[in-house]
Length: 66
Image (cartoon, rainbow, N blue to C red; front, side):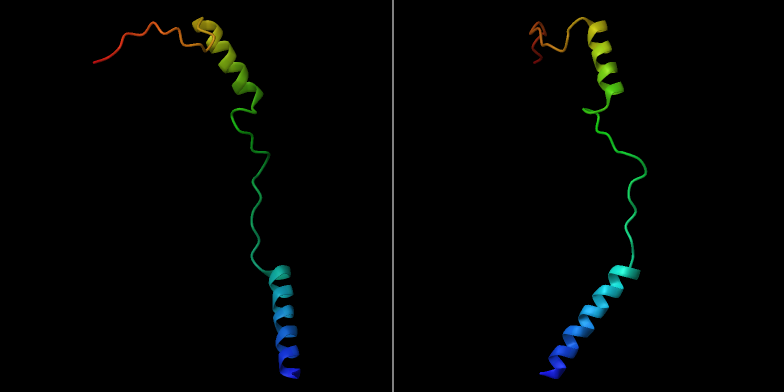
């Protein structure tokens, strides 16, 4: 029984040392923003759609390809 308690204690000490001194993961530098959350991207998309005059809607006037 004492060996089982010693084994559990040893495992606990190993885990604590691993958490304290083990390899660390690097956090990304800066905030990562997806294109749908980026205000500049959305502004450019809005500007481009206004320039083309379609406003992002399909007019259905395209010729079918064979």
